[in-house]
Every structure is written in C-alpha cells, then in structure tokens.
Image (cartoon, rainbow, N blue to C red; front, side, top):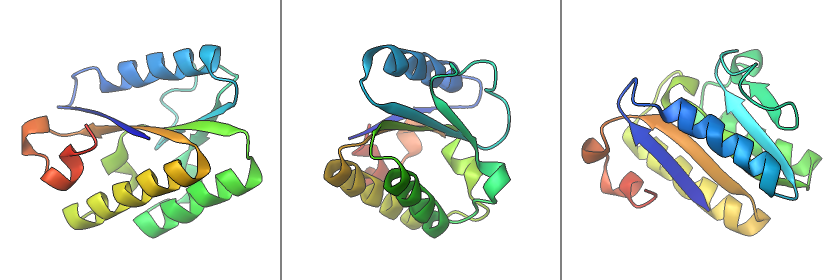
Length: 136
C-alpha cells in the first residue's frame, strides 16, 4: 500500500506526485490528502484534495506523524489515499532505522485501514537501505 517516488533533488519527484494526486482525485471514489512541509503546492493540487501544510502543525518526529495520520483517518473514514511530499524535510531529526520503522508502520496502517500512501523521498535510489528499498 506504499508507493515511493525516489530521486535526487531536481529530478521531478514533486511534479510526479502532483500528477498522481490529480489522477487520484479524478479516479478514486474516496478522499485524497496531500501533506507537504510548506506552502509550495497550493496552486498545483486540485481543490478536491485536502492539502495540509505540515509546518502549521510542527510535525518534527515520526511518532508525531503516526499520531497525525491516525487522527486524519479517525476523523475521516473516506480517506483512500495519502500523499506525502519531501518526506525527509518533515522531520527535525531523522535516522535511517526510524525512517524504515515508520515506513513499516505506514504499510501496516495502510493495509489495516485500506489507505494507499505515496511518499516522495530525496535520495539516490542506489543508496537506500534494503529496509526502505523494499517499498520501491
């Protein structure tokens, strides 16, 4: 239930994510949510998708993000797809083991709640740890 978009800075990850949000809004029968750090996608994301600015909520840890996502779902059972742009920029401190553990949690949560996730990550795909590569 996780789709990762991985590439170096400037490789078109955000454009691909925006295109996928547009497609999800057109084709899916549930609510679509897009989480981004700042207000960069305001005019790119269709108004039918719920655009959330993470900086408004001071998301800084993986635990906070787990609670945030759980709260979104608890408040709206019609959510079918959650997009997260610039994954690494959302967290104040990040360790690879925490990132892979978070992605494992997202995968389990998505399966249980029937929510798909698409996450963009700025990194060289060849440098990703196997625990993260399994989601490519």
